Image (cartoon, rainbow over all chains, first blue to last red):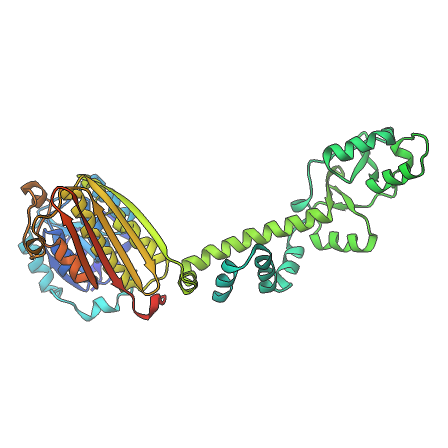
Length: 124
Length: 329
């Protein structure tokens, strides 16, 4: 599934890297611990978190995630948005709490673990 | 193409130029000679003399400006060319002093600035002249002088610029890497990390990732190195007053050495346990200090060695092995 479809299905507000919404979403991961995401997030995953500081961009970029969904209507810090823009990391905001965001994603077929989509995604 | 870079970097300057010339065959030079215009290589800073200039004054002009000839101008009009050869003939004949106007070549041959260089080359070989005046086609004014030396210098400069551009492209394509490693070179990158500087967290590892990518290394290896380096970088930021990350890329292996001078790890065994953390609460609130850093580093790498003394500092040596000897992937 493409990021753009997720955005419209969940009515997400796209805050950065609008040009990157054609990316395929391979799966999902939810965590607020950076090292946890690094250890267990897979390439192409959509990351659900409430952290808004700019290190989330570094983590998403290093682990080559599809994008970041911020929950509870939390907005990225200015520095975070700036960095995400320059590293082409889409950050999207949902008004819903994490539990609901993840539930809605799951309904769309975005699950944990790796799906074949992630492997096809040859993004570098 | 790949082999060329390797040869070039080992060769002496002379051999290098020869390699360069052979590599491009004659075609590149021919191409340039057609492509470039006379006014791209000519000298614009033209020393002119007047017809009434005494021949005895020419010596100083030629020697002073290190030139071997000059256009002769009457007001705005080009009326002739006087060369070092004319001057020597005059000296040799031991005549009385006379003026340039009587000794100069009057059937002035000139080139237009917008003519291709190949015309100049042809005219030089046909005429045997050492220089041509260059005239602007529209205004008819003298705009420069061209010698064979100008052509050679202009071509070499253009070749050098083109070669450099191609080298940059090649570098991006990552082909250089194989050649460099094949001749036993080690590439080193070093990053300084400031302690407590959360704003810049991950900067060094992101930069390193870009660098390794541009070398054309296997993306999976690059990812592993970047992740381990990120964890080490965040440890420097969270726990120390700063430190350095030194990265060595060589044949078949990448080594990342992370060094700091404070506070040290009292119990390395515990520190390696997942979930063990000494991070303060505010750090944990930001999602760091989860007690997974060293563990992640160990899982990403092929070898991790920790050398630490409480109060003195810590040195991590992280090793990554590259399959296929760093083949571009």
